[in-house]
Image (cartoon, helix red, strand yellow):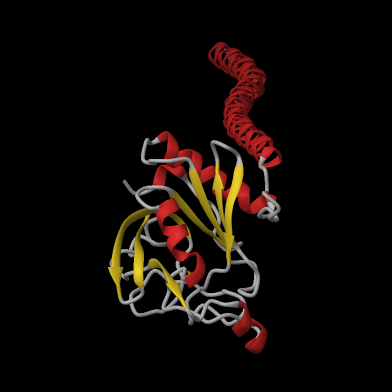
Length: 263
């Protein structure tokens, strides 16, 4: 009997200790869960804060750029011409500023072509950003496979006979089959970087005229070049040649990144 009593007492003592330990574990586990959850929430909050801060910085930069652009836009003397739409000018201003900061421009002229407009409208502007004045406005053709009255389809490929969008540096002047012409260097890979290879140049063309536009509802089209009227092509080329910024806009050209400009 004494042995059994001792065994029972030992078992009860062990059971008591086990119970105490289990109770302690049940108390500790929720605490551990709370601590782990709190740490996870803290890390998540830190990451959220970083994301918000990054987005805030980007937003502030964007707002600052847009504010500066609006100030310039409102100060431009249209010289009795209509100005490009603000969203078009904002897109052009963004790239112009980036290219200028890279020290790649030889003058302060910005040429803007708005291919969201029909070819029957004057949709090319040359803006002197230093004097804040429109110095020239003109008709301009798009590629024959880009559309009729409106340019809606674009390509960077040879023999596509389509226009290419985006930012360009104007190049050297030469005399070719269209007379005085000016080469272009595309600055956006996959968008227009084959411009020189494709012989996409600025030149004059007889088919860019208002009479033809009135007759058929659109001006003549090029093989992909931003061709302009014979009456203005000499003035335009002499004005913007040798490393000024030229931008061809269309709403489909989005998500421009200055860091991806070709050198």
